[in-house]
Image (tube, rainbow, N blue to C red; front, side, top):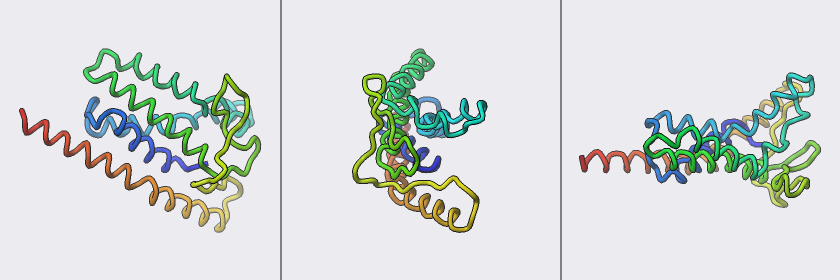
Length: 182
């Protein structure tokens, strides 16, 4: 599974693209909003943590297209009265969906392998045949595991940093153009 860093970068890139590069909440608040929606699906570990089985709930139904649609709907309900709220909700949906895409495209070393992508229409766990993202080690804290996870974050930054930076640049150019017209 990608790290929170990878999910946040993808959330910013996908959310900004889907919102058309618009500034809705504010230049920084929009990015935090999209990064948060990019990470949101991984909060499914909390019920397991409370119940004493941290991994027991992880990668469950929160990693499905249905959950992405629900997250987009909740974002729309919250933002619908704000100017540009529909765009913000579309960005939230895309940011959440980016999480599912990244988890689908990674190496999974723990059962159940994959994610329930099509839940509730199918209970099958799905995983890409050719992973792009390496796994993250969450076992004992040893130098080998720390090194592996740092290399994983470097890989995620290499792959997802440029699209996130491009999204930031696009927003900035768009904002400056609109300020120039006023």
